[in-house]
Amino acid sequence: MEKSEVFTVLDETFLPQMAELYSKSFAGEPWNDDWSNTEQLNEYIKEISNSYNSLNYGLFINGELKALSIGMIRHWWEGTNYNIEELCVSPDMQGQGIGTRFMKMIEADIKERGLAGIFLQTDNDKPAYRFYLKNGFFDLDYHVSLYKKLNGESDE
Image (cartoon, rainbow, N blue to C red; front, side):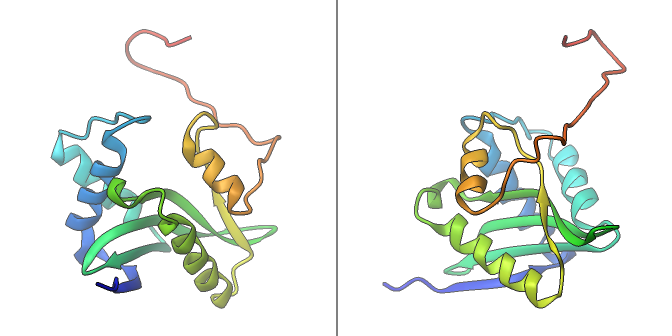
């Protein structure tokens, strides 16, 4: 049976499907994220997918959401970019080239919109890091992420 693929921009009507795919995608190795608090999960997905200038993409395969990119258009002095907050592919579809095809679809739409590029952050010890490098992204050696914990014990 041939697969039916539909690439589309997602709006708030897709929030339940987005939350389900996101939770499922990050539940296992190597992330082991515990999104069992569905209220917390739903609020997180709403926050990042409904921000000012949000732009969310989905890839449906045989009617099911199998790849997701949640992000926003962000203006910067060097140009206007698509900033990806979260990107995931359903665990049952990983390793089949879906992520690379999905990224190419996103890139084509971003180019059509006249945007300068795509910016994202990921952990350099996760498979996603190698995926992004393989797909033409490069490491911004001068860019770092910082965090300060304000409650509980420090994780130094």
